[in-house]
Image (cartoon, rainbow, N blue to C red):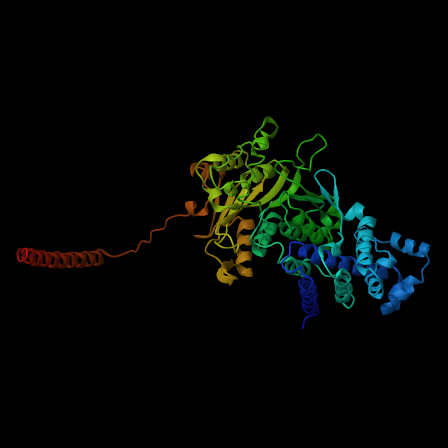
Length: 541
């Protein structure tokens, strides 16, 4: 078996074992289980990365191999501090008494759960400057909580069970792996905690196909030292794909999301994918009501790239009226949606996110936004006003209409709206709605795109190539003439096939039609006579 695949299976097994421990101690399907699982996983990851990186810079530790701890325990405090000082900022500082191996050795001490919690809190405190997530008000959400407080009984036994699962497993040999490995592990880690079902903050996990298409259509050539932003970041799937496409060392990530859970998961994703330098830019807060990232003059910060899969139907009635003011007129140029008389959860909040993103782009900035497909053809309201501005300001790159059920648990058809403030030329519209194959995903049906289908979409979009019944390249004037519709199907040519025939063949076909018509008329006359006879024979009884 491939070494990476083998390790991926072992990592998944570790995650399953940790979930089993949680279930044993009453946390199965509990709202706090995800905190325990993700924080324990993160503790293990940071512990092993510290060990790996100190071995890389200290030949004595590396030569010690499995006996590294005996060697590092023999260092004086000054020697240990010198070693720590040589580590890069992406490595969390772990003190010697914080090692998992040391907790394993102390597991039979009285009040072990307190020792366990104190260890995690100490690590969080030491690393709070870089590894914390910021809230809009400036409060820091640190790495770890007191995990044993989520257990009612047997706290010591619970913490001992956790440590015993961690001690015989090591991440040391996979720190040179890249995005594809970590993305698979991350998706498995959070699959029960950031599901398609959404919940209060509609935390949909963006499908791989959508993320890949967005990233590769946005970035099709080398770029350096750019900024990337997601105003509704969730757990960071879109940003991780974009950063991987650009190069993790060539971009800085900025995010905001209203969900504390999502912000915590995003932090873990950034750490996994070697984007620790962007952690100070992860903000928990309400982007629409209180955007955090600003320029020095107080205006919205501007970014090179923006990606977003915003919530489509989130209720924002509590603060809707606070948005409809002079301060927000420029940002929400097309207007703020009204509160519907019923179903407040059907409020079109995505329209606010689109406008926010348009205002957050640098002069040459690009964006990719997941929108309901109805947005691209709506003939009135805020939807159309936004499309009109995209055309008027010549900042539209194109649209890709995706197959139905690309998200397993929502019946909403989606399209990807691509913006490019530097695109003053043609626009490419792609209708990929007929691609993919249907599969069962639990109780739901889901459409999966094959890799070749994903690549076809990306290639056609980036090349601005027209293909019959699949893609079309149009001008801004063409879009105006079609009443600002961005649906590819409305631009496809209607083709009529003509067959060249001789006069003799034409006469022969015409005579055939005449003969058939006469036969039909005769048959009709016969049926008419029979019906009349039957009517005459009818009597009242």
